[in-house]
Amino acid sequence: QAQLAESGGGLVQPGGSLKLTCAASRQTDRNSRMGWFRQAPGKERELVAAISQSAPYIYYTNLGKGRFTISRDYARNTVYLQMTSLKPEDTAVYYCAADGAPFWPVTETTGYRYWGQGTQVTVSS
Image 1: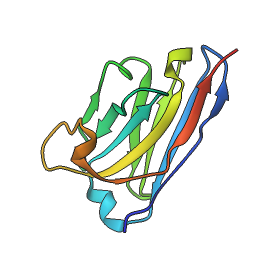
Image 2: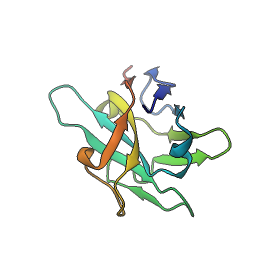
Image 3: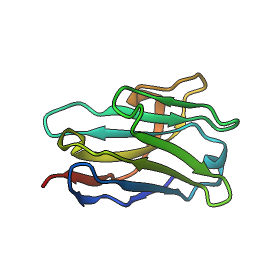
Image 4: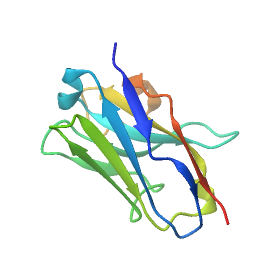
C-alpha cells in the first residue's frame, strides 16, 4: 500500500510563496509518474502539475504554469511543488498522487492509483 505524506501547506498572504512536499514511502514510487492536484470547495479535483518517472518530463496545467514548479528528489523519494505569486484563487486542498498510468501526460484523477491525504493552502490577507 502506497503512502504519500503531504506537508508544507498553510496560510499565506497574496503574492507569497509556499513549498509543498510529498514524501512517498513505497520504493516503486521512485519510478512512478506523480502529480499535484488541488481541490477548492465546491469544485472538482484538478491537476496542477505532473512529473514523469525519468528524464524527467514535466507538465503544467494553466493552474500552475508560470508560477508553480514541480520537482522530485529520487534519493529522498520526494516530490515538491514550489508555489510563488500566490493568489486567493489558489486556496484549495493540495493532493499528491502517484503511480500514474503508462502514458503522458497523466492529467485525470483516474490516472493515478495512490493519493495522499492532502494539505490545505489558504491565500488570504
